[in-house]
Length: 434
Image 1 (cartoon, helix red, strand yellow):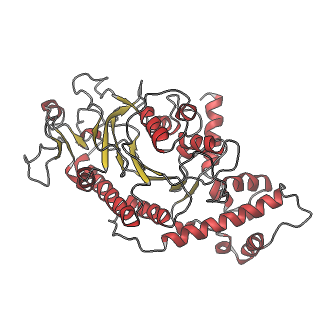
Image 2 (cartoon, rainbow, N blue to C red):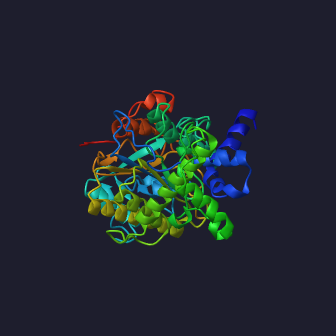
Image 3 (cartoon, rainbow, N blue to C red):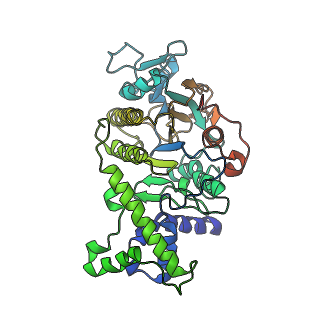
């Protein structure tokens, strides 16, 4: 590994573990405390608005980890070559195998449908609040989970640098403190959210987003509470380490209290079971509580379906479709569906042909999915050819950075070229906004 990448990787891990370090403030050296607390940034601790930034607009990113099989999610049932490549895994054309086992038709003319387990998403699609962008990828695709995910996170085909959403926050900060910080539901913050100036808040559950010193020993709680109750001494520089630590501790406590209070309330609609559903329910609660967060990030794993794909994939897509459906209905009950754009992606799709183990191996291009009142609804882009292949894989028809450009420009009102480090043709994801 080259030294620059090695340093970046070490730095990335350190940044992703920032909140864990922050919760151990009494047990780690002072220089580590400073670094950790610098990452434990509060939600909405700064009140100054940035000119031109639509702070009422929210982006929710749903990552499908493992490489979702796009061909069995958005099914080209009108193409016989699909069934030739997948004699046992192919999803039947609408009506061919009963309503519960055949594809849900999206476009009879082009022969495109959805996996039958995606009925929750199909309902949103039929209501005109969901879209599918076909054939999304990038040049010279990488079939490694980690590298390809880093490429998506950094918006850089070299998989180097900070995260694209982290750079979005950096651009809005413009050298000043951020008005809010991204929130990731999970053990570690994804690279996509890590910038040079701003760092995300990350927690696996709201109950864990709190000071845990008192759980370890009673003597650890009182010093922390004193930080929150006491103003910096008069002889302490306002920009000094002690004042900074006191402000950070108080702001983190306020953020923790806000989040835990928000998620303690019963949602306005029922959510299905499953990890993704729980994450989206948490996000919905924070949006309902009007926390000043513009980007939320959730993840559903398990899509690396090399063997026995049929049942596993069906269960995952059921969880995905039903969770997205409930999340949208929750936002609708709140009156927030015009404020929240939900974007779903995976690091790559699967190979066109099934393998000998009843599964599919790492591929390339795959669909992306968008939900919200502002999206341009329907099937967008061109479905990749099943004959003009790249070593047995689909050739992309839409560069994912064009998608990012559309989201940044038309939804986040941000300088996409500066953030992405290059100019890409803007994908028309957003239809109408208010």
